[in-house]
Image (tube, rainbow over all chains, first blue to last red; front, side, top):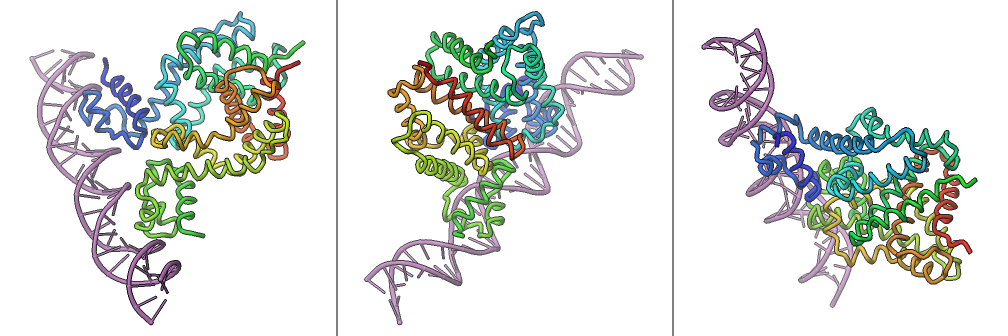
Length: 187
Length: 187
DNA sequence: TAATAGATTGACTAATCAGTCGATATTTAC
DNA sequence: GTAAATATCGACTGATTAGTCAATCTATTA
């Protein structure tokens, strides 16, 4: 594996376990099997490493969501895919999902340019725009829909985490029906 | 103001702005107007300070929720109070609400004894038990109800934060109707 | 082949910071 | 009033750590 990727992988593991403060760059380098200086060859500062790790993880998730998207899908189907793909990705990438939130509730988030963050939420914004014009969804501000969907996904994920594996998919399905019921415009 | 409280207040402000790592104890002491050693007189370690700040904030919120609770209230009314009190407290104590989540997504959470954390969620557990036997709410696992309500509160709060103050209470009200519609058992 | 650019190393440093400690002040208890 | 307990101070230290740097190694290219 490339050393840059090895550094990112190791940093993820250590940041999640020990936090930003509890993880010296020397430990990351050692555990990644590279020299101290190599880490700073790829990432000018520890802060850069923290940020680039965040961006790379978000990109990974977004790419997966992008492959699922199909312009012909109904709103409900599009939303279902977004919802299932996100939760199932989170379940098999728990460290990465945790890290996203770890950064989100830290001052490091403010260091990431607004343009980058905006780019990251393209997928969801596109879905919301589509939902809005479709008439399948209750009329509400975009930000509210975005926030509600996001927090419900987070909530269902947290719940499913505590459940036995053989019940997870059922739980996710039930969670979907609930949230769809929440936002669907009944005709 | 007592020096211990001054230290806690200052630590809150600095931790939220600069993070745990970005806030040296010396800076906390200086800005709180006490000597370096005084900080360690009240809090044996920096870790202790982080944890006790978390517990004191959670206790503050819980005390407010406790004063609202009335055994005679219907489930819907009890839930309404829980929901409104929490969001409105969060709106006027944004730093504190942020800090709770900052700790929640950090390794410091694991340092807080389970008994303490359990004590902190008493209010919500009591509400859920009451809701369960009332028959006013859909049958679902306690943890799911807990998680859904929590994430909905978080979501509405995040949304309301971005809204003009004169629209906030309406938004909160709408959010309440939504989540109640989600969990209510229609007869 | 020779030259250029990039990758890798690890010893080193300058700065920082959590926590100590002995001295002094203030409050409490008797 | 006096003694004990507690609060406060701030200079100090030992350890840690982010980041540097000069040297070496390894492609890439012309």
